[in-house]
Length: 298
Image: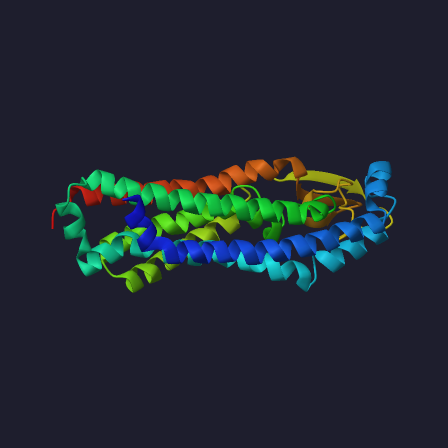
């Protein structure tokens, strides 16, 4: 079964390996340049001495060059799309191709029991996707480490490439696509339906990190009799005074500014909540697919 599964999915495996090589080469090249600039600007010493308060201009320059420009978008933006498209490309044919072409009858008529057949396919392919996700996450975490020291990890682009999100999103798309392929018995139709479902779920997950505030935002009140000219959501050092805090908004109340923000230490809480939703959907989809397939006889 291992050999058969490899033969059926070797194209996807080669694509994953190619993606790792391309992303890895760019991440290493760009990350090395980022670290050289980070050290040349004296940011390590400034962060150790004043927490960033003594070098806002250097921090702003560094962020503008590596976070707000095209350098970051080239590597971060594809990471939002890769989990969905790769999960669909691998998941939809897993069972859908067998049912569409009728090869399931040959597989089940052999000495290999149906449960073993399904376990081998799901186990090997899922394991490969997890390995791919972990490698990409490790590359992105290494690449983004200097920026993580001066920006918030809760910002959308780094948040989706670090922690659990990339792998969880990939497994979610895969699980939904497997179930769609089983139900529709058509690879193209399954990919379309699964992409819509994954896209809707991704939108919900993004809302959980923003307007829905599944992790309650903290509030800080700052005296502002003189207008607080440096208070802005995009300033180098957040108005909270702590690098890594993600400021949602700033409103004025009398002679005070009311700052709503996500503390830096809530990064993993939000990762587990949002990534957990992806994983619940993935496990539920795969569980339903296994249940249906074990009951299906025609």
